[in-house]
Image (cartoon, rainbow, N blue to C red):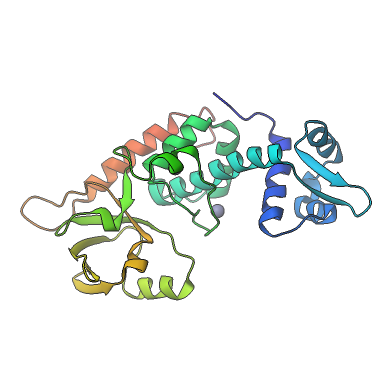
Length: 254
Ligand SMILES: [Zn+2]
Ligand SMILES: [Zn+2]
């Protein structure tokens, strides 16, 4: 199990990944971004370990290929943890838990969580989650709790888990239609356009919009009615919550 240990080094590596996402390589930028957490000795350690490369003359710094591999693991764990906390656990202390999570979690567990969550592509802030082995091998898995809306059968209901969408206009449109995480939708038609029922209204959506919506799998309505059973969602989330908590030793995680 590849457990990540050196928290200070990891924090610097992560910040360098954020800089890479912004196209930044200036050492000054890193110092400003990290404020008091910046530590020149850590940079030295990372350099000696071959995780960063720098140029003294113009004071730039960036991750080497090894450094990037390490950063990818950390960022992936962090953003998947956010997804899990926000969508599944309904928690508020996203940053605190996600930060702790990324340093304590094994690669295998990260892949397991990714699979359960249906291999999400973005964190709740819309930042990309780096792909893992699990995402490349199997886009769909019997283990997933969460699946694309387009995968449910006609006539089936499902509760929305999350919406991965960068386009503000689309998000506003969906919000205007009351299509948001937590609500139950029913799939009426999937060709030539999608028609779903949401809070009593029939709504036509094109495939592109539908592709951003993920739902809880095997959502069962109450017997003989289309009314969703709240307990079903709760049980599932509860199971996942216990699963998740079992991997934490820290008493600070509630
Ligand atoms: Zn995020
Ligand atoms: Zn995955």
